[in-house]
Amino acid sequence: MEETALIHLSKPYVSERLLLRSLKPSDIDDAFLSWFQDEDLMRFYTNSRQTHTRESLLQSIEQGIASGTVYVFAIIDRETNACIGTIKVGPINRDHKISDLVVLIGDRRFHGKGLAIEAIRLGNAIAFEEFGIRKLFGGMFETNQSSFKAYTRAGWVEEGRLKGHYLVDNEPVDRILVACFNPAFFPASA
Image 1 (cartoon, rainbow, N blue to C red):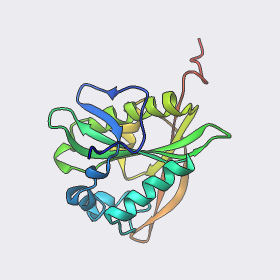
Image 2 (image 1 turned 90 degrees about the horizontal axis):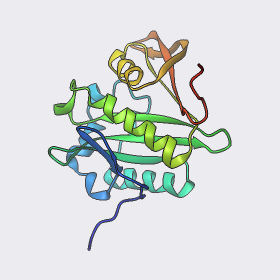
Image 3 (image 1 turned 90 degrees about the vertical axis):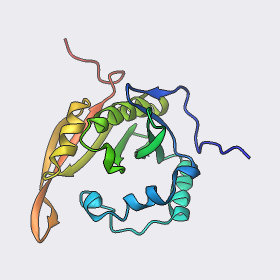
């Protein structure tokens, strides 16, 4: 029996080194699950204290699709055809046409190569073209400068800061607020 994608995209979303596609159940293997158990990798994810199983992840992804608010995509390395991470679009607020966009390059062999920038750009395109999102938003720990640089190099801008929003080792850390605007809704001013 052929495995099908959890959702279908209207076209391929491809960059020089990456392909974004719907996450398939077969992508969620032991290596994939290990990303969520890696304390160093999860230190900047606010929901990282959750324990995930293959079944709980699949259930969460299917619930997001059924609700029409959360979609998860596999980040595929085009050279090896390996799933190296995920992009989550959501939760989507359909009234305001806004959404978060979260990127995880889980396979450490692919860190430090600028792939997050490519992945974010592809995620922007999916959010804008497939879901009609007018504004993407997100936030990160001020100490997560690699994430901040990846998002801003992918066309996002800093919108603000929440002072002392997080507690890390009992020390307050700012949350940097970032956003990306769909040019169909926010044409560049001349």
